[in-house]
Image (cartoon, rainbow, N blue to C red; front, side, top):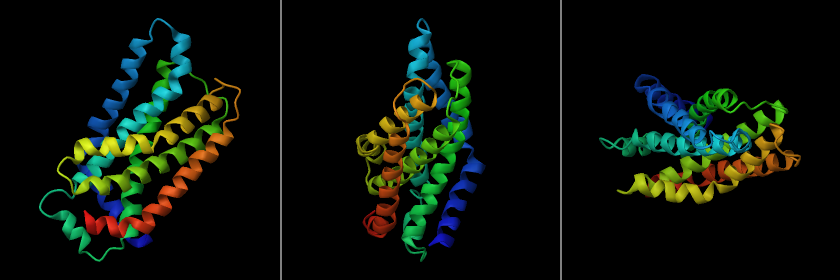
Length: 222
């Protein structure tokens, strides 16, 4: 399983390195989202600083859907998905590899966006440990849930429009938990951010486990 995960993840990352879709399209899109919100709240810097965690994770969520759609678009042409199914690779390894590739792309985007909110919104980091751990858990949760529902929508003609409808309601706890944890990490609230980290870890563990156990059925159905 782990060997197949490395093979699939490496394949997706090599394709992205050659196409540079993440750096030339997704990253500018994410930065543009932050800039638009910055212009919208330009007259009230206090509101902008308070809303920075929510704006950050909203931008990450939108980019995660683009990354997931791109991940499954790689096998959409020339029967590549059938070739992947018949390759003998462990379905659990396929799930872990594709989720890991999406997660790594999101990590790169989060670093860029984190620098963006620090510069544009003037935020300061009060609890770096909570910041990093909550970001890691949220990234795993978004990547695993996105990969799971990406395979559900992969065999449908309307997958581009159906995928957001499937993912957005499911990842609402990630958006809520990550925003609240970051608000505590940035010193914007006195609430305990570590309990929100527990929610994020639980969500990620559930979807990673569910993906490993059920991906073989989804691959056959898609």
